[in-house]
Image (tube, rainbow, N blue to C red; front, side, top):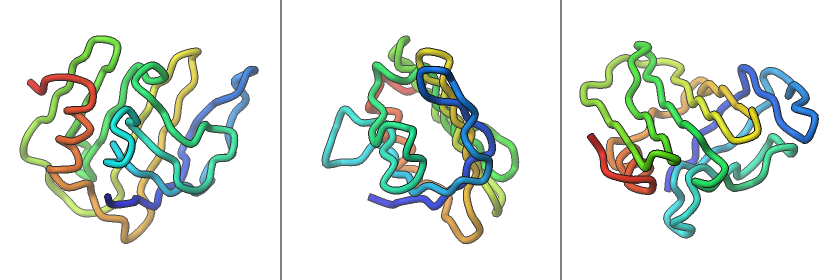
Length: 132
């Protein structure tokens, strides 16, 4: 599975929802194959955030292409996933995660980090429900 080098644009976590340090770096995996119930794994960085986010933790995940187009939206509570076709552009892309308890993370890719492949996006979508 591909790992993605990212940095935090904005985010809050913890029992008091404290603001995480902007531009903190993290290495992320989407829907790692070795743990089918995991939607997002933080391989490195963001120590205040759990290493693995499960469907029970997540309200919404959005992957945004460099062009600004939404390329994936999954909403685990609804069991819904949408993978629009036709992503385009090169440059920084975004990963937005809204979790239970008003916790959230808004990450951006670091220079040279590839955009997730269609297979990786579809694996994440399939981990929560049917695509449409």
